[in-house]
Length: 288
Image (cartoon, rainbow, N blue to C red; front, side, top):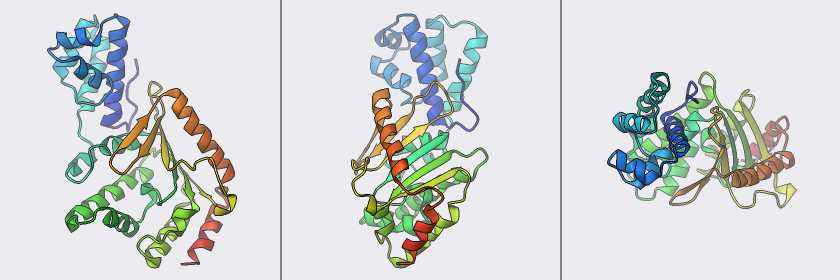
């Protein structure tokens, strides 16, 4: 039975617990409707539990385990412990007032990922932004928002970056389109500092940084920005994250993930090498 790896956040623990409950239910040939009736809940609640989209009550999980004939304490204990861990609040939940509900699951998945691959077309990725660059982007996208709201959103973005420097950090592999480096967000001074920041962090052992140059012409990822998350838990599939103006999409079907992986692999081959990327960045920063 799979358990959460050290460092896994509550989001992944909920997904793990839900997947285990779904496996146990299916092994017994029990429908979601029947399982829901047993704990005085709806079929849709069982579905949300199994997808890890809601919090869990320990009593509900204990009742479901009994219903699924999991009576051995050695089997029950890890799952019930997972309930308590899954209900632990992540740091980002202190910012619920300024974070869109559709973005909060991503922060939890990002915290738990072992490998993050991202391609950005328009902006420097959030995990690599300076505070001033982040503030400029957030201010532009939050017209009319109070200053305190903007500052709390900036705090979330900067707090997310701490995972790169923690013990056992994830590996971050970034391909940035040259357009994002030449778009003067916040003005020349902010952009110069942002690109210098990229040059300074490029040597990080857990960071692979590449640039998709204009000179290459058309490329595999013209459909837009995307992120692929991989987790240390073998039971969890890779997840593709796509963000829109008012929402987001999470893809975990094998055929969808494979397609994005193919695109990312082509991007990484066609972009600057990690070794040559700092020189490319230095040429660009000198133009600001």
